[in-house]
Length: 173
Image (cartoon, rainbow, N blue to C red; front, side):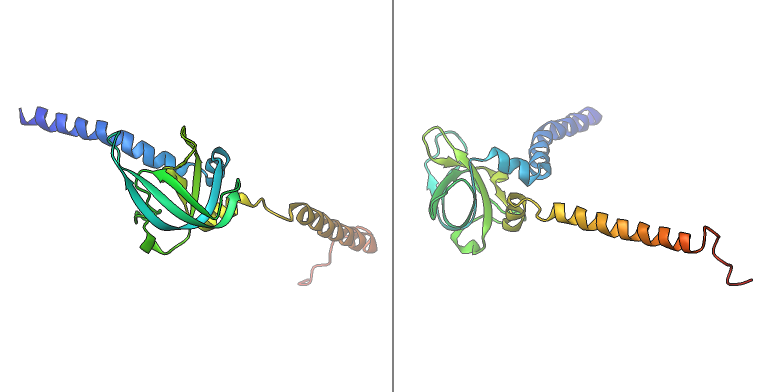
């Protein structure tokens, strides 16, 4: 009897924990670049106000007012309100006006025209800015690498011709 009770409790825990851990894992493992591509707007900003919305769906909703310091995607205004469930940063700290730190936010328009986001829509500001800027100078790096390789091969061929292909003399003997 005790064994069955323990087994049923363990299975219940696994069943209820799986969706939560799968959501958290997919949110954390999805690259910021992919999430950025799926968002309508993205920006770096700071929360200046949070207003609770009356509960109609069973999930607490909030209007987060942001001051946008850097637009990453789209053309967000300097002050923007985003509706979402409770937003937290990567360390689990709730975003409030006293948070006093810039965060990256990804959002899309909802059915009423207002912007909506989720817990996956909050990212580190530096990570969001890095994901939005493509790497620069890749072409010149390849050219410089090829020039250096050509110089090294040319120098080696010149040395071999100078010795007439003879092996290098042994310094010990």
